[in-house]
Image 1 (tube, rainbow, N blue to C red):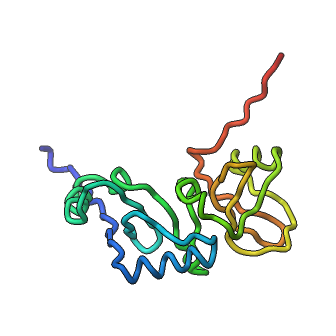
Image 2 (image 1 turned 90 degrees about the vertical axis):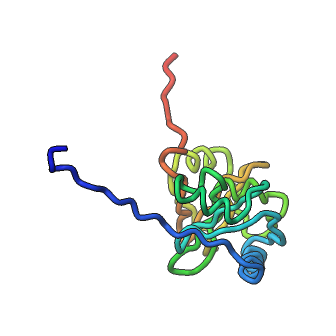
Image 3 (image 1 turned 180 degrees about the vertical axis):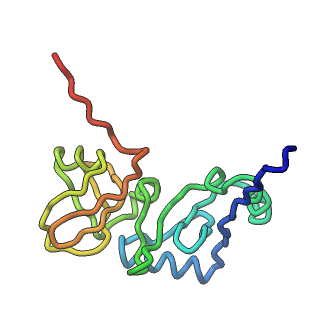
Length: 170
């Protein structure tokens, strides 16, 4: 070794499993926001904001051991994020898909053109008269959650998951 090597430390974000009362509180909030009454899986918080769901036969202790070696999203599914400012929940695309049969509140339906723009990651300039987080839907498909303000719907689709527009020449 030449002596100029730098040791890089990666700060691990703490993983905390929700106890029964914390899970009940989260489900109450999901019910209030979206009509969701039940989450049949284990739930953990990753840091202050991210909520992860787990199923299967891996124990909490085994998951915590695995988490020391690999980021835990490889074991669970990113389900939701807690908004720092409002403390409201924003479901991920997977979260809306997993619980689509329970979602009955705060749904905003798009037409085909709007759905295409949404999936390309664009904010939608629509005056809705609504405010807050809404589940975005096109026909029978849930497309994640948007934040509705007076004149627009803010998009949270990650860049890596957005549709790419390609012009087709005939």
